[in-house]
Length: 291
Ligand code: BG6
Image 1 (tube, helix red, strand yellow):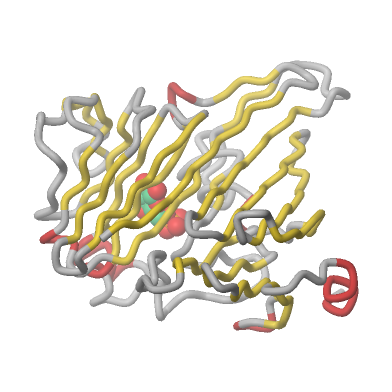
Image 2 (image 1 turned 180 degrees about the horizontal axis):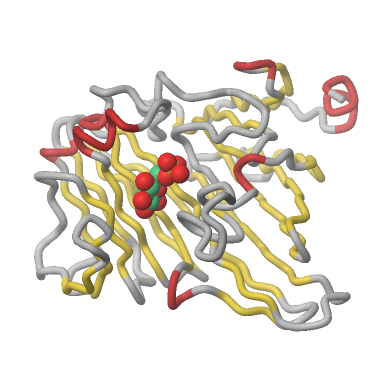
């Protein structure tokens, strides 16, 4: 399998190898960017433009094991987000992040980015995931309902992006001012965001509704702004587990919470997507960094 990948998708700046837990990963190392993606979950675990610090956060306590999600990077949540609403025994955030994806293409783009194309089939949905590892990180998730399906089907998706921050207590996230949100740490209450950028002083687990605009994460201590812009996504989830929840998660270090925050590009809850047989939807997120 690994040898076939090496033979079929050989591009300068890209190699396939066994990573942690003997899981196969793609390693990107070019003049403009470095990155890493595990075939399990089509899971981007690392990216940064050359000259910048790491942008994506990855837990030192993560599992790297077939069938278990990696903690950090960009898990793909699909076809549901969070616990399954009908069957609590189903895996949280769906199957996309814990199943193997097939590599369908790899190329070097004219701007120097390495683009990977991965495919998966989950239920009656055909998934195509394109990742461009360049000066920007662009991730495109296209979901098509099989034309052989006999009725429409709905799904939720999220590109659940974990970012490295100097200290979550001293960063801010702009772009969600005034939006309505579901506060998952306050009994799912529907609230309205203030007109100020978000700052953090406790656990945050919020689904911001009808939010199509870009977010900007300002981290003065690291001297950078991370911009997360998107299309095809109507919800934005912001998450930091803080102290107690971190202790409850076996694959998350007790003291790691200050160093991360998630800004998730999503279509969840009332923004889930319904497709007719043969219909498709595309969710795109582009991440860039400036100083
Ligand atoms: C977030 C959810 O997106 O993911 C949180 O809003 C959840 O409620 C978090 O705790 C992590 O989920 P998991 O399944 O990776 O532990």
